[in-house]
Length: 418
Image (cartoon, rainbow, N blue to C red; front, side):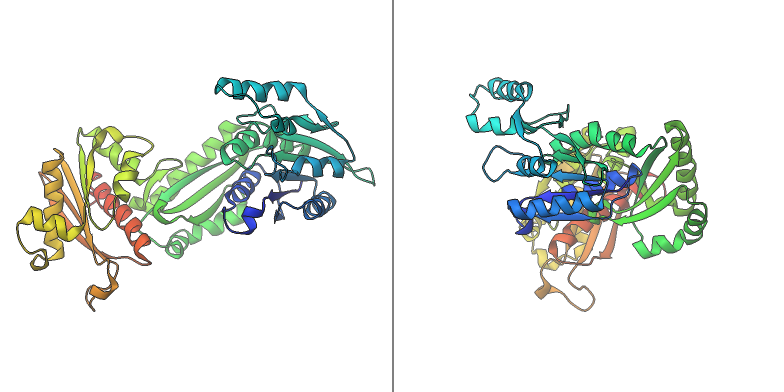
């Protein structure tokens, strides 16, 4: 089974919206064991959309179209699909009533143009999942030489698209492909080593798995989320796949040691907050160089937020002048970071205080302290520490990497690895 993806929308071509949908769909197809050789972006133009769809149907067994299912005149995906399928659009009363009910639940009358969204090519099957007003479609296609193919239409709104993909499209594709095996994955999140460094650490294991073919490993550098190591296993049952993932995770953790900080949806913030919560500790933050980025991530972590007391965001020189009652220029950056971490403990009534200072202005960099040099400070009753790091990239990346580097330093101390 070979499935390609067509993303519809002129805004994608103009760069006004980044096409994350296609990459996500591609990942889900790979995990489901469905080959995908082509991804296309096309603007809101009938002729070009039709050309893309006809080419997709010609060279692939299935096509997933994403976007163009709205109620306005430029939403023509369903119209083009009907033309390719050689069928007429007909009103689906069930969908129409569902859309009316959505508007009524919000205390609004449905504009008549929303009935466009209830038009379905004859012979098509609406996708049961419909979190928004745009219904998805499963449209069978018979080619001139008698081949049976299929077009799926899903909305461009990511959460609506994902619900339809996971609820109907992936399982329907697997059934058409005759796939009975289960493919599952697990992501180990790492920090403290480059992608090439990880590949070197795991080189022998990668060669062994390439020879066996199952499970497999893949790397994905994800900025402030760390470098991800994805394990993918294929088995006859979900329990067998889980057992393979468990075994491989154990093996990789032995090789990677304290580089691994989280698994799957968990991130550095939830890991650190979980460690603090388990000890009955609370964390306070003063942010200067990181401009609120750390506070936001801690406050919105997937779990453990009860261990976060809060954050204070201020410009470095101003808060140092106020807190230290002196000239901040006379204070060494290591001492400044540590003073801020101590203050975070006090003013936020926390057991742990953290803070950073950094060379944020290239004009203030020196040979020994270039742009991107940062100082990471932790203050607790039983110990205090400051670590200097040199971070790459522009100011935004320096802020992000300061956050994950500081939280990772705290994690290592809490786990007794430092």
